[in-house]
Image (tube, rainbow, N blue to C red; front, side, top):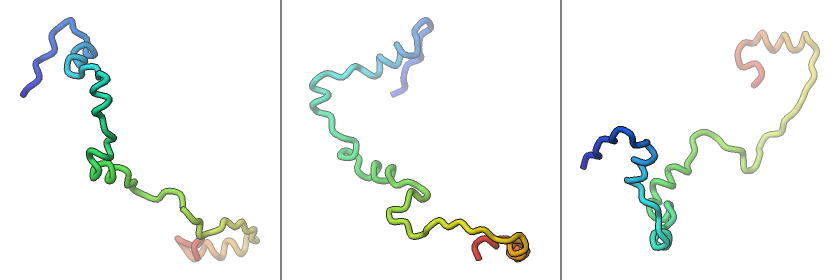
Length: 84
């Protein structure tokens, strides 16, 4: 069913409130968590893309000071020289 056009002189909030009535105590008693009603949708939403923080870090940050000539030699090997 198509929603009727908002009449002039009525605010957007007032118009939207006509479609979204206030909840009663009975409505709140009937309410269930979204994860219970739509478990597949919520599970898909919770799966984030990309990496989050590591649960058990496998690498340790190390700082290393090198002579300039040593550093230049590594840089001359091309892209990815820091991962050698």
